[in-house]
Amino acid sequence: MADQEQPKTELESSTPLEQPGSTVTQVRTYKAKGRIVGMSIAVLAIWAALYIVASAIPALPVPGMAGMITLNAIMTAISGMILGPAAAIANAAGGIVSMILFPYGFSAGPLGFLTVTMGGLVAGLFMANKWVLAAIAEILIIGSWFVNPQSWQTGMWMVPLPYSAIALLVIVIKPVRDWVRNAIITQNKKTMWLAVFMMCIIGHAAEFLTTNTMVNWMFNLSWQYWVPTLPYWIMVDTVVILASTIVGVGVLVGLKKARLPLFPTILEK
Amino acid sequence: MFSVSLKSRNSPLQKLDGRTKLIFLAVIFILVLLFTDLLYITALLALVLAAWFIAKLPTQPLKEMMQFFLWIAVIILIVQVFFYPGTTNLVHISKPVPAIGFSGYLTLEGILFGLAMVLRLVVIMIVAPLMVMTTPLPELMLALVKLKIPYKFAFIMTTALSLLPSIQNRSAIIQQAQLCRGISYDSGGKFITKLKASVSLLIPLILGAFRDSQTLEVAMNSRAFGAPIKRTFLLESRFTPVDILVIAGAFMLLTIGVMLRIRGFGVY
Image (spheres, each protein chain N blue to C red):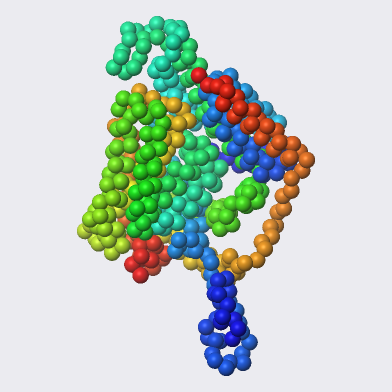
């Protein structure tokens, strides 16, 4: 069987016909390649489509911001724990298309999709237990805020503090990290809510700080804008994270019960 | 809420290749971020508006977008006008307030910089819709693939686009079902009501869509998705001499812009 000696890269022999001495013609089937970091491309496409639809549904009007918070803010926060690191790709695809169709939700302009990509990436890496990469990404996001000379002004160091600092601590401290991941993977009824809340902090913090950094570079906003409005933004972020927690728990439980594709289930196996 | 769709037909811009328009978009975006001088940003805005009118696009979307970004434009203007560290005093407002960094005067530099930042916002916000309104989405996706974006990524985008109507339909059905159960989606409702409405929409929407993904996955596998074959496309795009001219012009503009910036022009 000459085919058996070939490296099994693109094409693989189908197992039932590989009997020694078999005279049956070899049937060659194609090994499915439709996965990215363990998640099916079909699921990622569906998520991207959901993301686009969510971009068109206004959830909360936000004075002082370009437009309003649409449901995609919730989807970004929960994407990492549902799709794993592949959430970055699904969010990027959905972000690019929704930015084209509904440009009002992206104050960072054509590069606005990067913010949701970072949100999915950090949370997804954390969920996949690639915590070093997640921590590096989070440090880069926080660092990019401080690279801008505008951020060296009075009180500007406080802007990334509330949720990005918490996110970084959750990623770096091993007992907390393990507890959050285990509670989500095992869907522990008592601890799951808090764990999902932590995950939503990680996803949302990466997104909103990337947005803040990009907006700061583009429009040179000084401390007179950022510092007085900080309590307001903390409130907005808290609302988004709380809403994401409620949706996140519902989706995690629902997907597991229905035995539908879910990254924590893949990890559990 | 308004969305952006193809509006320009039979215009010179619509006939350009999708890649040409993407390159033009990138060049304008880079240039508008390079400069902080009002004059340079006004010139870029004029260029984008000229393209808008050459494409025979209606002005209504421009007005809608301006209304949408009015809030942030006003905030940017106020912050820069009052707090930009200028030297040419124009109007005396009050005594200096060092605690908030206000000198007591409105300065010429503050006003010019504030206007420049507002115009930068306008350019950033209208340049992407300009491209979308002159390019059918399948052509745009093809342009992304031709620009060597990984096929799997392009597939996710195109599939998401084709699934959009069915998911929008599902979303409308869920909203109707939840309305029957007494959940209000009224925009005038209370904050908590809106939050509840968002939750009651998103959870069934995500679960239902994920169920559909199973069918899509089977269909993809049965058609040997990712098989090592040379992929062909229903639509074909080729550069015309006009495309090459526009791309050359865009790169020339970018080179001149970068040179000017290096020599210290175009910034305060």
